[in-house]
Image (cartoon, rainbow, N blue to C red; front, side, top):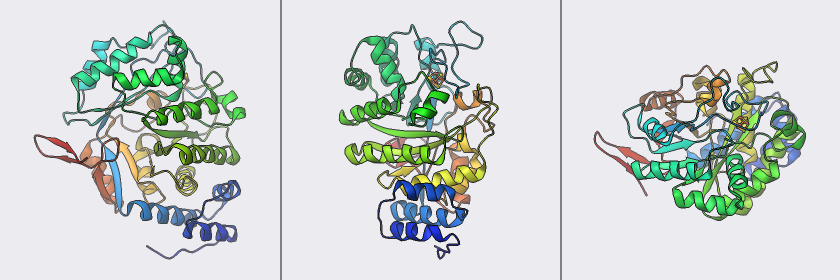
Length: 373
Ligand code: SF4
């Protein structure tokens, strides 16, 4: 690793803390967002990343399934949700969802990533049947399903507590939660971008209950809209505090806001510099999160590749069919083959390792897929 050169003197005490393995404060986080010395910020994030993961970069072979885009909420951040009976609204019959799950690339997937809208009429049983039906047909595949927002909405509709709802989901076959819907926890921001969603504390409480019943989750953050640096650091610190309590988070995934076709489309798109900085600051502040992901679909494969030198150790997966960010103008392909993910990772000087959802290495031969347990 090259020597650390710092041109921004304000970073010196932060660098000392990072090198000593000490925890960063709110002020440190804000200074990292505001420092013009992005290379020093990146050097420090890379130092932490290499200490944890060496040269390895993870990816997985997964498939997204979005059973419905019908949604009662009208989040201003969203181009995916539709009101019932409007143009473009769809809801998959269960058989259609099972069919979708098996379509796409011929390689065996190890994960289904299942999220969708808050449908006003679909009963909770539909979602349980969806998961149990998929589990029956694809017993080897990990079910990473439902955002905290969906869990809270389904609990309300089924008149169950959040814990009961999560327990029923787990019984049906949910193995972990993807961690979406976190957006930015600050109320001021939530009122503008997603007024009808659960608030930040409810998101965190739902995650906590999931972790308590043995379901791991990820955590996301949507950045690059109306939030400020304090809101971003506040979001990271709240996640870090919950992780201290539960150790239930696996991966932090910063998601760049895509404004096209949303009511916020007057806002500019994020820049490559912000995307890379976001990865680096996340790696430095979230000292208790095992993984930070540069999700190639959201930040483009090229920026995700560079991020592997700025703190990220995971690029996500093959995806196969991405709908949510493509409705919002994402220009990336809808999926990527395993070979291409490996090529991108190698070109960044990293060693690709295919993982399952729980970060166990996957070995493939022509006829079998094995997960090391
Ligand atoms: S972000 Fe989710 S909850 Fe909000 S409108 Fe879109 S699909 Fe519905």
